[in-house]
Length: 250
Ligand code: ADP
Ligand code: MG
Image: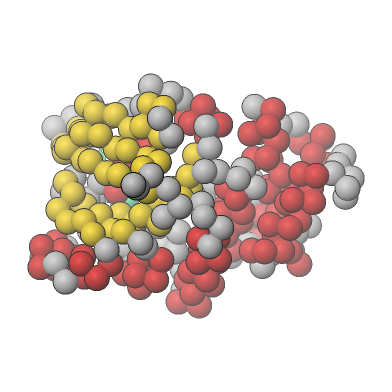
């Protein structure tokens, strides 16, 4: 029997007169990579924001691990084990890479963080060791004492991914993790996401780039004008005429 970790149940969202999401249903299986694709303005980011509590649906609910998320605040959802990478990186540009990666670990453990406490940590601290390990894994270790603001756009996005990974989420949501990246950076990010896929973390990835989607996804849902118009394995979706039509209509 399949093990559904995230259940989007009959979600609707209107912004004034605009229907951004209409009757969206989604079942995400544990340990899988579930991609949500669709043209610009389809409602992908809105759906992700509903899942993390940033946007309240007009109707319907999201259930994660048996708990209804739609009645919780974003920080509570985060503490339940849901992390997200946004379309625009949200990092602390004046802090070092190492400090950036340690902050979410403290925030998750203590509900807050004090920069002085983070700076005072010795190399033996567990959180610091973990942060060093993740930066190594993500290929940014050599610059761990540099300010995060000095990174390229692609590296900022990878840093944000590191900030999610240190929280050891059960569910990771990624909104266009390769948006605006050059092909070389995109390939490095795919390679990284494939490596973390092997660790069994469940992921929902929103992506515009088909190359990324077909390299990573176990299952794909296609969103167009706020509705799921197709769903299936990458091969099933690739061959679906409705999907081609939605993309050609862009
Ligand atoms: P996608 O991520 O698929 O490109 P979005 O979820 O960002 O699409 O947007 C879906 C639709 O909802 C778009 O028409 C967008 O303009 C609209 N929209 C998104 N957020 C808001 C908001 N806060 N207020 C009003 N309209 C919004
Ligand atoms: Mg978007």
